[in-house]
Image (cartoon, rainbow, N blue to C red; front, top):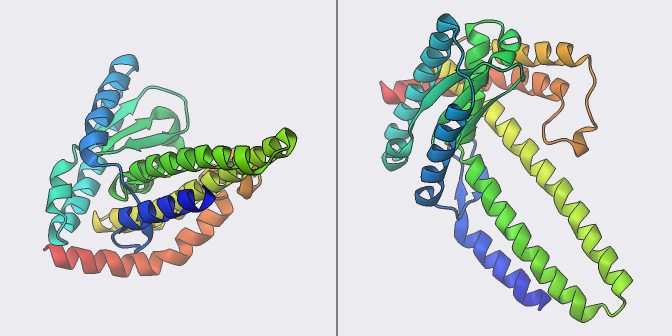
Length: 271
C-alpha cells in the first residue's frame, strides 16, 4: 500500500510539473484555470458586495492606475513569451477597501484588493507599486492554484498513510502518534511552501514594478516600514507563512541589480 501511494504521488507530480516563468522554479499544478477562475471571479464580486469601497477618490484612482500599469507590463511579457492564452484569461481588477487591516491580496485571475490600512506602509506611489507588483506576481505565478494542488496531494497522502498505518501498525497508540507526526510535519511543510511563494512574489513583483517604470528601491523600503510598525516582533521564521521582514529587506536589496537587468530585457522584448 505504501509503495502504491508513493508511486501514484510521484506519477501525479511528474505529470503536473511546470515551470514558473522568469524564476524558473518547478511547480506542481494540476488545477485548471477553467475550474479555478470562475469561482475566483465570483468570490471577488461577492467580497466587493459585502465590503466597503473607499470613498477616497484620489487614492482609489492611484491604486487603479498603478495596477493598470503593472498588469499591462505583465500582459506584454506574456504575449511576447508564448503565453497569449494565459494573458487572455486574466481579468485584472483593482479596488481599495475601507478597512484598517494592513494587507493586500490577489485572487487567481488578477483580482486585487488593497486595504486602506496598508497605505501608510506603502507611503508613496512607488511603495504602492511594490505591494501591487508582489500581489500581481502571486496571480502570474499561479500560487493559488499550486497551493490548491499541494493541498489535494497532502489530503491524498494523509488518507494513504492512515490506511497504511492501520494495516502495518497494530498498536493504536503508535498509529495515532505516526499520524500526528505526519500532521505536524505537513503543516510546517506548507508554511515553508508559503514562504517560497512569498519570496518568489517579492522578486517577480520587483521586476514587474520596474518594467512599469516605478522606483525599485521602494520594494525593500516597504518592508523597512513594515518592520518598524511591528516593532521587530515576529514569530520564528520556521513557524511563519512569510519570511522575516529583515530577510525580505536583504533579499530585495540584493536582487535589485538583477531585477533591473531583467526588466530592461523584458521591456526590450515587448517594444
